Image 1 (spheres, one colour):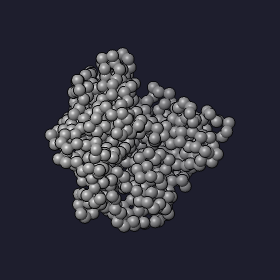
Image 2 (image 1 turned 90 degrees about the vertical axis):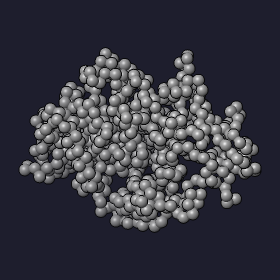
Image 3 (image 1 turned 90 degrees about the horizontal axis):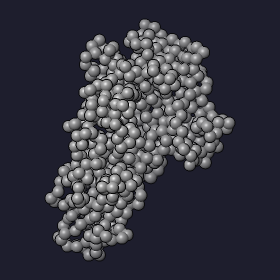
Image 4 (image 1 turned 30 degrees about the vertical axis):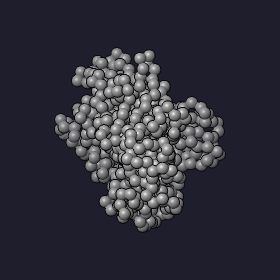
Length: 635
């Protein structure tokens, strides 16, 4: 422990909290992080920025039908919640009243900051409340942003294999870069660091699934300092464990994302209607500071940050936040059980759901968790035998959901589960019957809600991020959508079952084609397969699982490329923009297409898949998995 206790100094315009390891300065009554003094550096925050553009909570909101408004949340009242030698907790609140209608988001917001004795960092959390009868609104995003000194922090780390020296923010200015297809992406033409010339910088290349988004941040070499954002729990984030969010990016900026439409579209923008009551605690998250005597090896600070992350995860839920809205461990409950899969076309016995994702979210339809954005979610993975245990669940009503890699569709436990303090609910054996009507005639891909197993091309040499050369996340390179027309300049993809290899012959995204006049054209892919015989007056089934959709419409035709209307269409679906944002998946979609036997012929058959919407290069779908089933053996 630190030899001194935590000290609080409240001035007219600032609040300073010092525990002898670092000093945190907050504006008063705004509650903006204006300064962090640590390891001999007077301020880690970007001193060239205005004070309200350094470390802040923000949100994007709009009234129904109105434009979005970006709001840096500034408190109007300051209060001391707890002042002791071992802990200081302070509050910056902004309360809503009718005189603010149309100008300020209709929420009461309470931002809290906590500094503990002996802790090399600080915690922050916030309580949002929409009272009954208040105006309707939508919230497109809420997060915390920290902007560090660009003269100090040049090395960014997100994971063991995603860390590098980053460009400077000045490198993104017109004199040093070339704009690409959207504002976030630029080609570095004259960067300050010449080693980075010819690379693409795009913050979306550093996105991460929430289940893996536990620690990320920046390293300063002189003096050796690490600044890390640690999120010990996903419970307050929206969209489930596979939801992707931004992390750190050029600025140097580090983000704690709580709710966003990234890789999901408007489906993950909570809409508050009919004056409904809503309250939610976001966080706490931990801003961790570390340093070393030897600044030559940045991995030392990264490794230490990972250890600290594990300590924070083990400490969740924290015992020290004062707010009664943040439930402590003894106030929460738990759920356990075992998940099995029943698919008689694979095994006569039930199959252990190994590595399945099992979670609690607000009550809804099967699979609704991936679009759920108002409540809390609690997820885990099953062991080799299908057993799961979910602990520290907030009290309330939930459905239990699951999905199993290797099987299509979503499981839902039909009974609503009510969690009370101290509950340990054992659900016993649960059996998931994945969608299945008949034997598999053929399949393409792996049902894992990702397009990563398909052919991901090398990037155009003109648009490379060297971090992702020979990298497992090669799909995060810029401009891969343009490679399709280069691979298929005159005709579209044709996949022959039994001959083609989906890892080579199935492009990862079904995209549009740019024409010579710079317009875009729909594309039609073909699946060719043989049937030795056709069971007359029987129904076959085509299962199409999509890993992503962006303003797309997928039309299916069987053995007749011109039939109109098509045998099946999804209609207009999706706004996840995962193709442009290097995401390899967005939201999951599953379609089951009844195929009449008189559409099929003995011998050679062709399925035509047309993505018919074509006003931009980013419209399209990513396939997760396609399966053709024969008629049921049990009819």
